[in-house]
Image 1 (cartoon, helix red, strand yellow):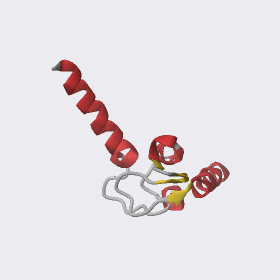
Image 2: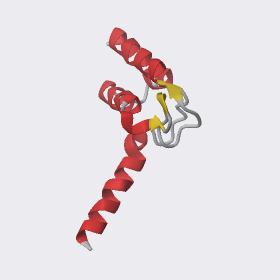
Image 3: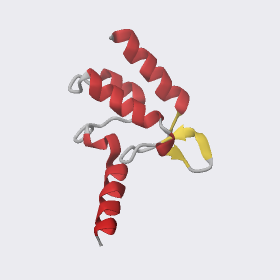
Length: 90
């Protein structure tokens, strides 16, 4: 019973992922994260790092990533470009 509840909590956290930081925002592309004035630098890095992770890879299309709550998948190259742009602005 406890293991089931714990597993449900983990599954819910994974499903929500970085979207907790994005609540109420309309971030369609990784560059939108970079440009978001209401997010801290650390929050931007967390969102983009999660977006780049294999956890959000599109099944059968490993070069694409899709965060829960986003409308379409984006290429890993686009996510990495946004991380580079964030480093430039830092």
